[in-house]
Length: 411
Image (cartoon, rainbow, N blue to C red; front, side):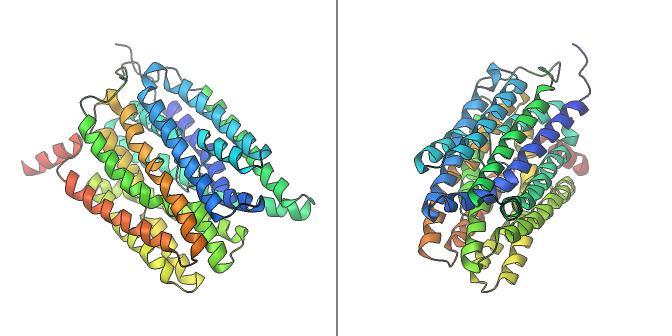
């Protein structure tokens, strides 16, 4: 058996590519509804495009995860970066609704503040392969932290089209199209980073299989529960929250960008806290008991008549709602055999696209008929039900390292 190489270079490249991708997602998630409205489309059509992106990402993620054993991670990531670049160019040059919807379905566009894409399970499985299990949760937190901070900076970049239109004399539509070109360039930069990954980062890693076997029942049950959470989250993707703020409070896109920058910073900081809490109270408890109060905040938002209390609730939610992201990733990776991690990551990540695909369309419809914010109510209720079901179903399923800690304390 050959000696495994230092995992640090692999981790650095994954984090660098993650930052580039999330930087692009940060401004696109805010500019997408503005661009579509600029082209003459309504809230329902904006919701349809958001649904198309999530639906397409889900199908692609599942297909890649189940077939990941055919090629190495580097090949899959390079192909995904090429698709991301093509998506940006497509949105920059196409202005008709149905072709745009088609590009949204087959491409990598992300209307959410979180990372919802084919890249996610590939990168998570790669990190789980090269990082020791005792450092896995902390590394997943770092992975999420980098992506969220980059997305927060990207939110600030959403103000660039307004500046370009005012100072360079460009039309607003042309300035927005330029941002999709920037999205494509960032994809190419991420591809250049992926190109430096080794074909086989761990010498003695077990060969991935084509499908789930030992962990099939457990992973499918998790996927079903995650799908409920994703369905609730689809009602409040960042693009549609920005649209609601614009409709309800006439909020400028530059102001929205600043707001989502700070929500992103709060979310990023929560990842570091989540890793420490998980070490003390366990992964599942951290997932559930940080998520529940954030869902209550969603329920309260529509009842606020002024922007101030809305922002307070958004900030509280941002500080809590994503603490389950690194812990969930670590939990899934720790309760399945190493050879099934790529498939498990895909099957449990797909609900963040597939199950969430219907709700943005419904949220767009609700925004079209009422400015109250019914989408927040629907999302909050679905997420609370998910938390309770997850806790009740998996309270006795612990990662091996947590079981070992409990055994030591008991003895």
